[in-house]
Amino acid sequence: MGTVVDAPKAAYTTMDAVGRLKEKGVKVVFVLGGPGSGKGTQCANIVRVFGFTHLSAGDLLRAEIKSGSENGTMIQNMIKEGKIVPSEVTIKLLEKAMLENGNDKFLIDGFPRNEENRAAFEEVTKIEPEFVLFFDCPEEEMERRLLGRNQGRDDDNIETIRKRFKVFLESSLPVVDYYNLKGKVRKVDAAKPIDDVFESVKVIFSNFSKKGA
Image 1: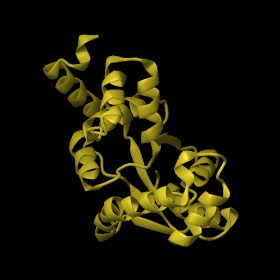
Image 2 (image 1 turned 90 degrees about the vertical axis):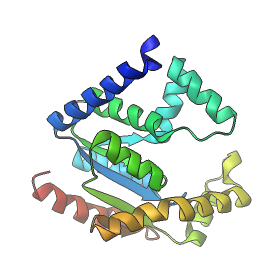
Image 3 (image 1 turned 45 degrees about the vertical axis):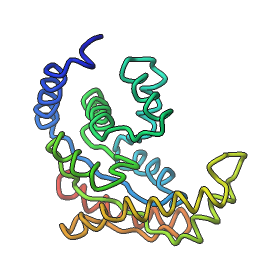
Image 4 (image 1 turned 120 degrees about the vertical axis):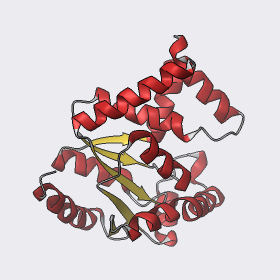
């Protein structure tokens, strides 16, 4: 399994992946929103109605750690040491998931988390998202939802919630601003009830599908 650390081979694999992603005609939608904005629920609806495949960067990292692979051990050690997992590691997992899946339409949830993630994704995959689906929700509403669903989760106490919200504002909003300047942001009022939010989402994806996506 030395290929994981074999630099020339890893570089070749990535180049090869870029070619295959292009050949496959992969279409990507980034899904961004603060903690408690309802992203997960709406992604499940989009998958069901519009046939996208939902990829969560966090889930892919956790699955890689669970697999016990060399790569997974490296990720686990970095997280343990409080280090940030390099963008390229997450991007390669996303690339692999897109290539191994029979679908060509993907919702990428919770990534890019910051500008560096964004630039690295475009650089490594040579893919720009079709658009960014941004769930816009006031902090008070997200806080209310997260506290309401608290089932003994450590990360759902008030201080942690506010910290997560601050990180989202400082790191992820610049990504939204970047794509907004390119006319690629589709903003949804996520403070509304779930069904109303999905009505707005449906309009966005119906228009996208009509363009031959």
